[in-house]
Image (cartoon, rainbow, N blue to C red):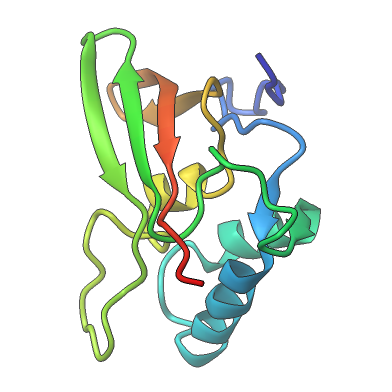
Length: 143
């Protein structure tokens, strides 16, 4: 289990993300383009930090089972003992609202680059939620 563990100054457990982060180069190009054209969208700072610290790989060298744009991620809520499926999408063209299953939402930004077997601690107003990544299914690439 790979985790970055540092308690925050306010005593709440921070969002944990495995290290090192691996991102697909094509995804980074798309995200950077969208960030430059939509600076008001949420989670821009989180995504910029993730890009700065990540190993960015091209499609040939990108490992299977790492969350990328259009991946379907199966999470297990360890407390509620429920499985949650999350599709990591981009906003639709001309969208005025950003829906939940999106890389520009807090959960989407956190899941981008995570792998099967990783754990995520998600702080909420009612306390931390604990998730385990059961699987990551990447989109099939056309040849």
